[in-house]
Amino acid sequence: MAPTEQETKMAHPRMAAGALFFDAAGQVLMVEPTYKDYWEIPGGYVEVGESPLHATKREVHEELGITPPIGRLLAVDWAPSEAEGDKVLYLFDGGQLDPEDLARITLQREELRSFAFVSPEQIPQRTIPRLARRILAGVEARDVAAPVYLEHGQRPGNEAA
Image (spheres, rainbow, N blue to C red):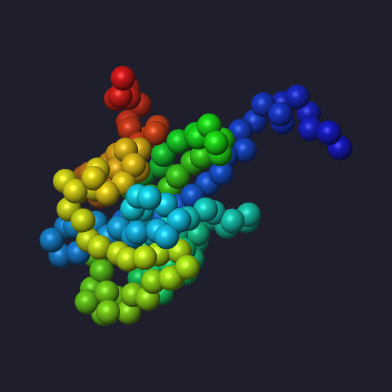
């Protein structure tokens, strides 16, 4: 059956989800993918029938080999891409990793080279601008205990020229 005119106008975005993890100094855990030239946070695409929270838990376990509790939503970012189309990205609070979790991290070697804790000031040097903005907005949302809505990593009305 062919889609209706209304259905062809509806967005069908890709969804991805990830978590921000912190150390005792408030630095953010970032991972170095084998297939990108910039650093990321743990996470990935949401599969059909899967919630963004469940996808975050699954991806963290697959990528890092740990299953820490994943907390509240920090940010939702609408970030369409010319190459990939509409995307909606969810960012959750992974909390502070304890020494036991850090000792159990086992990287998914086919996807990740390394991981490091990065100060918020260093994040823009490690990753692409829209991801840096999203991470920093998530750090801020965690500090004020309120989630934030973003477009391309920025609060609407704060777009770069």
